Amino acid sequence: MPDRIFMPLMALIGVAMIALSLVWPQGYGDRSPGPFGSTPIQQTPDMAAKIQREKDAAARHDIEARRAAETAGQQP
Image (cartoon, rainbow, N blue to C red; front, side):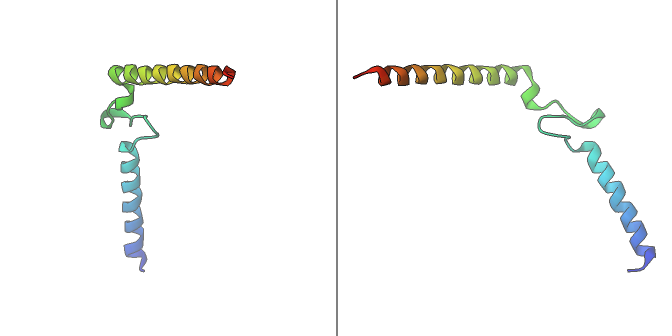
């Protein structure tokens, strides 16, 4: 492939990759910088409260399961 085609093509690919990196999320739940990003749904107050309720319910379920297992183990 001639350099006249290859070098501009590589420059175009490089610019496209940089542009994509500006709008692509940086990790799970993180937002992109500047005017491109939006607040992830996991970070909204309503969703944070829902996640906390689910964690609390799971912890209560684990405690109840342990108590049930202990009482079942004590039965003759």
